[in-house]
Length: 92
Image (cartoon, rainbow, N blue to C red):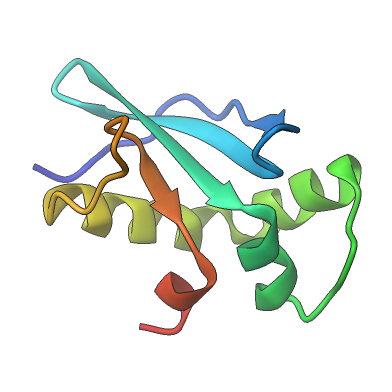
């Protein structure tokens, strides 16, 4: 089933240099994130700081959520069960 994204929170994850956000599948929480590299590549920028990555994420949030949902439906998840949106996902 596709994810829904009612919660509009987003968190910078410094260890992974990514933005974390959550989706929901009939009450089940799905952890998602988008890599900093993917966000930078999407806007052709380099070395964005935390604020810059969060800003780009908000600009591209709708697209990132669609990509994350499609990956979730196809069960393309990381070893820990999370959904990771990468640069190549934007190009599909």
